[in-house]
Length: 115
Length: 109
Image (cartoon, chains in turn purple, orange):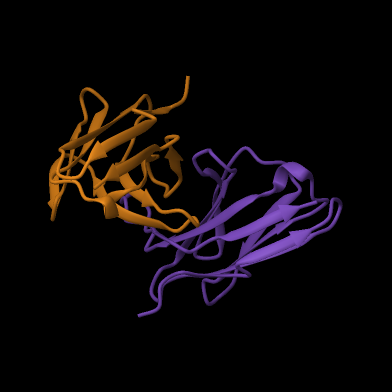
């Protein structure tokens, strides 16, 4: 079975541009979470989507947005890129049913560099 | 103060040594995860714990809910265990993970 996939693997953008990152969860998983990992730090929670609805949002500006599609894949969009947005963006999927903790499976990440 | 604290931040060991990494947290959780991250970024889930102890091969994870503390042990460490080990806690009723800053482990032959 395929694991969590993310695209692209690497991306270079300039300040002020917009970027879209994509994630496909493991088959059967309905929850997708996005995390930002700046070099040398632990990941920070950005969003969680379950059954196409936003379940949680981290402390990130409105320049960050996301959505989940009927096939449970997800996109993370970042507008007006800043140098500080340079990071590894990780996607994780799980079964995600309310009230129960589930193991999360991480994708390989998208490394975004903003110049 | 971070909600999830790990110690030590860096750890070096000789092959065969017993390794312990500690994690303390200050929030209510539904589960605690131990994750492994290799250079290049890929994260692998090692354990998810709600109580007690779990063992997988040479890895053992324990959690004390009352003391809000967890430990990851590696027995008979090997150079291939070299990686960053991250503790993360899951908030109630969500999959949102709050991560520690990680422990960088290097095992030398």
